[in-house]
Each structure stands twice: as C-alpha cells, then as structure tokens.
Image (cartoon, rainbow, N blue to C red; front, side, top):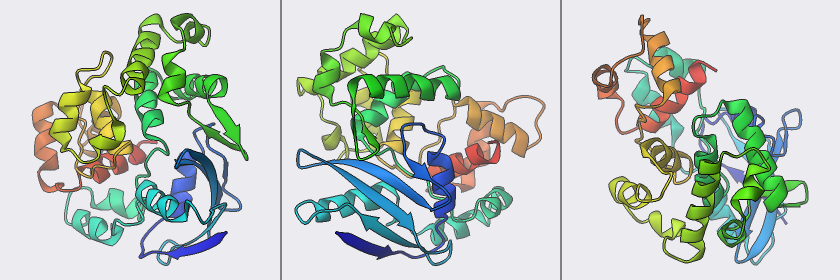
Length: 287
C-alpha cells in the first residue's frame, strides 16, 4: 500500500536524513531521499519506507510498506516520530526575534525527529551516557544486532522481555561496563514485569515522568531529559548539564569558558515554549 502525505513547510527532510544517517542501525539512502522505519504495531513488525518527494517549503512524502490493518496506527506513529504535526513556521518565526536568529536561519526548517521505539530510546539514553558518540553508536549497534532482529533491511530493538533475560556477562562481551549492563537489564525487568509502562508515560507531565524514571537505577536527570525529548517529543526541554549544549552556548556568546547554569537560564529567557528546538539547533550549530 502506498500513501502520499503533504504537510505545511518549512520541513527540511534532507536535514532529517543527514542526522539519521549517523546511526548505523538506520537504513538511509540520502541520494534517493529514502529511509526505512521499523514499527511495532499490534504485535506486528512493520517496515515503512519513506521517500521525500517535495521541497523544504512544500514537503511531500511517499510511504510504502503499509497494510490495511495497521495503516491508521502507523500514520499516527509516523506523524509523531517525524513531527509532521508541528508547524515549524511558528517555531522559526519565534526564534527570528531572539539571539538564535542566525542559528535558525542556518538550519531553516529542521525538525527534531524522535527515536522509532520508546524502549529503544530509553536504552539508547543509558548506553550513550558518558561515551563519545562514535563508540556509543557502535555499542548500541552490537547490542541490537545481538538481541534485536532485522526485517526488510530495518533493525528492530529487542523487547523488554528479551533484555530482561540477558546476563551481565552477555553484555560485558559486547564491551558494556558492568554497571551499565546492570542498568540496562534492571530497567528491562521493570518493564517486563509491568512495574512501569512507557506508553502510559505519554499521558503524564514532564515532572511526573521525571519522578517515575529517576527512581530507576542508572537513570539521572540527563537521561530523563533526553528521553522526554527524543522518546516522547516534549517541546520545552533544556538539559543544562549537557556538555554539547554548554559548548554551543560558549561558541554562540564567545565565552572564555562554559556558561554557568545562571547564565544559561538568562540566555534562554526568550526561548520558551520551544526550548527543545533551541537545544537541538544549538547542537546542530557545532556539529
């Protein structure tokens, strides 16, 4: 089944492909403007291929691989992942009146895209803690290749039930630290035993989600904020402890050292309610 979707611009799909191509687990063909999205729908693994047909100002997408039974659920999920329901024109206009004007002009129409799988998003936040990006992607790839599965060229993260039965020794063999292995398995067990539901978190406020996740061993404020942003798509996140964000602000304001939290709060006074976009564009400004 093929479906064509048009949305309001701006929306830079090529910037989306550029960012996703850095993850070795995601199938991307930038020349053909295509990518494959693995979705778990109604206990079925579905791979949707998305092709960009339009321009930044007139975005249009062709989706193939959908079936009648899961079509509506897939469209809702894809709209959420790719932020097709967020009018970036409003975001762009907001930041043209701020200190980030030139950053938003340089990355015009760039959405921040969500992770494809909620459990995978939380796992990735844990795995990526205190690692350089290259090794973080390598470690995540080893993990998914070992315990996840592939379909039609797309890789699916394993379910919590699978990871709950993994041993620390299994993960150590992939070069996980013992502590990180313990965290990953512990969180999987919480989910597998229904002590926590990631889907139900969608209905809660940022503070309520923080209070639930922070109780998990291995989850700190940085992990919660990244999950809120890239797992749940919350628009107003500003992870001040993030080194990349600090470095971007240091460059933007030509500081001799990284800014203090007080300075960071002052800089961001005009960025609400789109702090997540400010954060994402600042990250992009130093890539």
